[in-house]
Length: 448
Ligand code: DOR
Ligand code: ZN
Image (tube, rainbow, N blue to C red; front, side):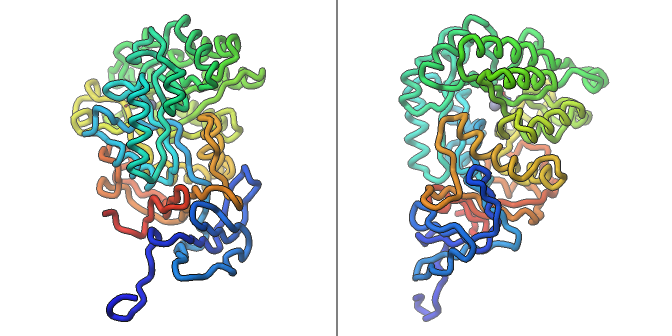
């Protein structure tokens, strides 16, 4: 009771019982797509069902406000982010990156090792685990390097890295181009059941490239990154994955050719998986016609024909998951000539609205959208997938699919604002993110 005698409603962060009343809960892994009440007590989901909240009352019960038609998902899992700590905290750090993740609906993110120094050792992996726990909210799962310094030569100490908390290995940003190194990496990683995540780029074919090689690059007079630079690496790696029986994952797949190879490999039972980014599903090389550095990414934005193949492959499950490749860069790396700009765009806070756009257009079934952002990536990272069912740990993402908002720099929690979607209006808003029963993000509360 406040001093005025008026009862102050508790905030979502003060209550240990959360009630989601009459939400559409969608969890394909639990065969759930229904309007239900979901009750969270402490760390756990205790009730799921029609009118399940009726028996819940008490002092500190928080009724989560939401619009009609709100969607409740298991907490989203991002297999591919760059949080830039240690070393480039002016672009992002763990606190800002994890806050951006929570605001984007992600309860779990995997952090790529291309930091300064590279996460190729136990000390950095442990630091990331410990520091992210201190920050709280969205959980961080480190991905460690495949090779020392990401130089493509000596393998890292994967036993140590796994023990310290690494969920996968990757030299993302660079490709492991040497076949002998890749073979040994697959063999070594498989002894610890770590997936090897490859950035598929034959660097000899992309030297000096600024964008996708095609009509647009010719028009702009820029050196192009041909599709085949991705395809040849995927083809070789699939052969090595079959030979070594290791788990192989293709990061940010971008070409129709790579998908053809992956589809064939999957049909033969080879342990390959793949992810696609929202930007490769939505944008083409035409967006570089104005030399917009925000659209410079690696691999580059391709063409319409790639987009339709990527969308189909995501819908039919050939592409297992959606991953943001959240790649923060400051004005230093982006307010410059295209040639000098670093590749990458931020993605954590825009993934849900952008991907729900594909759901609305019937390009992506809602159940596939959920699976591609929850169970599928969690499985690849070897983590328990979040679920909406009684007894499960409460990791939840509440979304208002009809809310419109405009992407402006001040709305984004990420330190970096490098996205071509600035200024655009989008539909679909993350309303709340719950991690282990605690509210990590609440759109109704002003950030501190
Ligand atoms: O666009 C990209 N940005 N692709 C990568 O592979 C690396 C990333 C980064 O670290 O900025
Ligand atoms: Zn990346």
